[in-house]
Image (tube, rainbow, N blue to C red; front, side, top):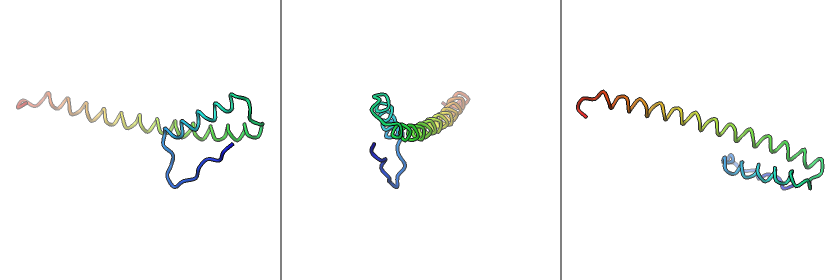
Length: 82
């Protein structure tokens, strides 16, 4: 099983998801030894946690953006000069 690349940059959601999909596929093929399966499972759990965190952050940002947009729209209705 190839080692994950070490870099100064953190992975993107897309790259982590792609790696997770590869790990799942390899595990489903049943060609990994027990030790390789355990290593793959650990890495998959790390990637899953990372992806879930990224999604939670994105959801929070959307909530903040929606709250700002909703306030702007509500304020536009109250402006008699518009």
